[in-house]
Image (tube, rainbow, N blue to C red):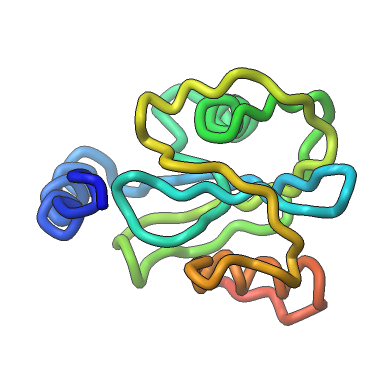
Length: 156
């Protein structure tokens, strides 16, 4: 287990406290990236457990598209070549007060060199019906909404 993952329970509250004081609301982007075989990209971070869609925070002065482009390149080595589809915007209030997540479906992309600066431990491609056991609940819920017609939640 990485040192970042071991420190996450102590560092997360400190960082969230800083973000709450410096920002009234936070916004993140996540990408449900599909390859030609219908598999999805999943990332495992060095600082939190489980498998998640690649993504990250929208910085001051960035558009959602700019943040999505940046995060896909950095985390998963994915360069967008077409327009992503906005699927939904979710409240992440249960995990982080004032946080929201925009989920995009990405079908048009090309591989590029990732630049995750040791933030990502691993990137995999998985069939939506054959996910790793450690796939996050939120990721599983979003996949059910997109692929299985489950009702779209307002909560991440």
